[in-house]
Amino acid sequence: MNNKIIVVVVIAVLALGGFLLFKNRGLAPTEIIETDSNMPVGGSDVEETEVVEEAAQTNPTGIKEFSIDEVPFSLSPSTITVNLGDTVRITVKNKQGTHDLKIDEFNASTRVLNVGEEQIITFVADKVGVFKYYCSVGNHRAQGMVGTLTVR
Image 1 (cartoon, rainbow, N blue to C red):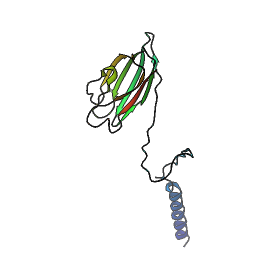
Image 2 (cartoon, rainbow, N blue to C red; image 1 turned 180 degrees about the vertical axis):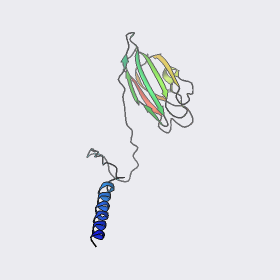
Image 3 (spheres, rainbow, N blue to C red; image 1 turned 90 degrees about the horizontal axis):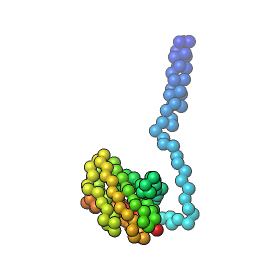
Image 4 (tube, rainbow, N blue to C red; image 1 turned 120 degrees about the vertical axis):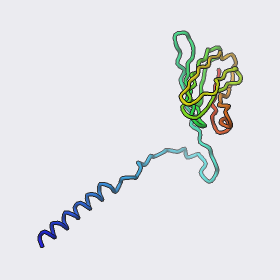
């Protein structure tokens, strides 16, 4: 009789321990996101775009250097700002898929890059304005592979 009670108690303790150990497993931590109270709420289709601006790295020769990472339907950073007359050097790094990069107004472009390939483009920012850089492969531009180059 005493052995049966001990076995039942041990099984109950193991079951309770297992339950407590695994009850929260599989639940992801909750992230609290603050929102602007002026943002519209409802059933409208709103596309979210994260704007990432990279600070220029100026080397001793005065060249503004940037690095753009390409992944399917995204360019990072999505915003670059330089000054009129700056020499701009961009290292384009293809992280996934097949992509190129074009900046029409400065006649700057890469060849089509495969995964892991990089190419450097260099140009002088000789026009003030806001210009688009983009991937011209297939419909990648229409699917969001676009960034903004601002020359002030």
